[in-house]
Length: 243
Image (cartoon, rainbow, N blue to C red; front, top):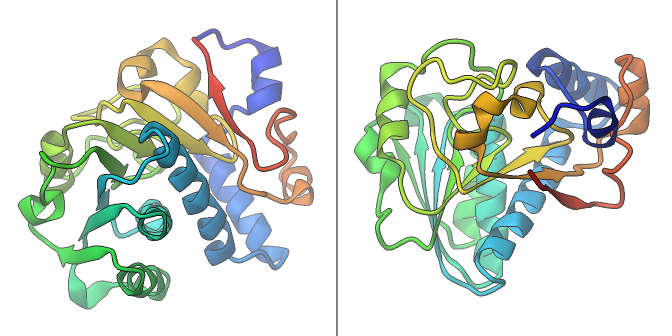
């Protein structure tokens, strides 16, 4: 995938630090993380629904304890509302769930998602073999080194038709390289804008097809961060980038 300045203007080229700064700036402006998470998860669900041929099917979400996992649980809730049989395993100590994740766990469970908070990788993976789609919501854009052993074990066990959120778990979003084991996704739905490493050839095998999703990041947040908002991500679009 060529890394031309034109494509970067249209779809973004965010470093992980810039993505975090955008979130923090939006928060300072009064747009809460829960609001961004809701839109992000809805867009992931739309991408998943498209991958399913717009038909209800069984879906399993492999989630972490951070914001990526929260996005996955929002997507799970919407897919359940659309008739899918959805299960989810969240890799977290049940006694150390933060308030934001706890809210998404409660909402997903209330919507009929079969959800477990797990510390063992095998429990997080659940029933993968009969899932039409597996959503990878384990790790986000903050990875800089090889995944910790417990995360690596989950990543190594993920299989099937996989939709990764933001970047495939195990991928360094800044470089596009995998410092250790990495998820190999059929599709990656990346949020707010392309991540810089995803433009690199090294990321192609793990990212698969790339879909870029508008999540309603305020234009003023981009400006305050000294960044140009992607010109082709407006109106709630999901844009598939062709190689």
